[in-house]
Image 1 (cartoon, rainbow, N blue to C red):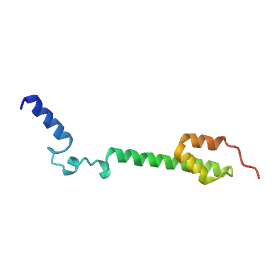
Image 2: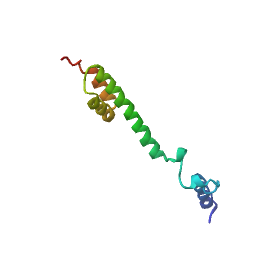
Image 3: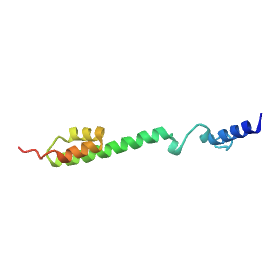
Image 4: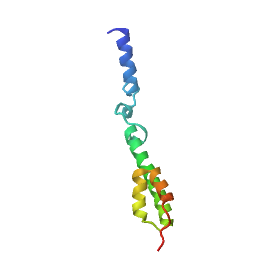
Length: 92
């Protein structure tokens, strides 16, 4: 094996944790036992919930359906919140 191939294999094995002695790193486990994909999904879900609650609060002050506006804010994020601010107050 040439010097270049051995140094590349050492570099790759150090990234996945096999040479460092960290058994969790060799399994590809990151912070909180979750990988980067799971963390992005959880963060996106949290952001969606925040926008849904925001749209629900604005719509309920305007006497609109809170559940419908929560779903609109959850799925369309800022667009749902902007729409909730733009809809007129419902008159009886």
